[in-house]
Length: 237
Image 1 (cartoon, rainbow, N blue to C red):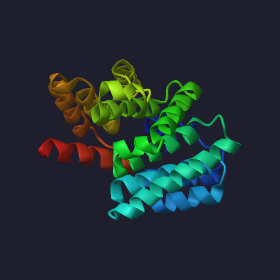
Image 2: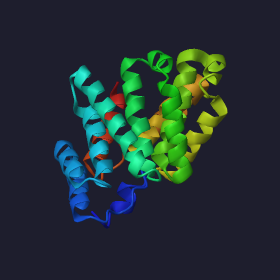
Image 3: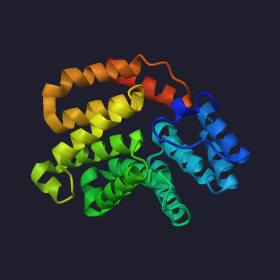
């Protein structure tokens, strides 16, 4: 795992753990035992909170079938990540995982409802903080690009300005994410979706190529396998 670490964590820029307990939590995560990884991360505490939060978020996003349980899990991750920021204010992933969880929660309740609740501002602020702390955080770039794209797609360019969303910034974030992490299935798919939301059907041929590239990747861990399988399913549809 240590040899593969730079590639496995090119997206979130998480450093190699200092604690053996946290290493074990990440081993469980990469093996796909997300519930055990969450438990191990919570038990380890400190930097273990990052793997716990990511494990619960991925479990909820990809594997949880019950919608209420999924939304509750995202809120739990967001709350725990926000609390983590108090003790680790300079940890980019404490900010990123709050935004990720709130973003997935927002998709679950509808983007429009999330904006009414003020979640858009929290998501945008957390992602910008993550990028300020770690400019090579590809996942934060793609998530921020997706934020701009989804808000514009749902409420239109004019109203989106009130949420701090604009087309140019969205495209810049997606472009940067692709440069930082071009062999990530989820990055390829999120960029494909974002480009189409921001610029319409003229980006569809490019989006289809990005999905095809994602589907052709060889997964390096369980999370990547979930992403690659999702890309394959989308292409079949």
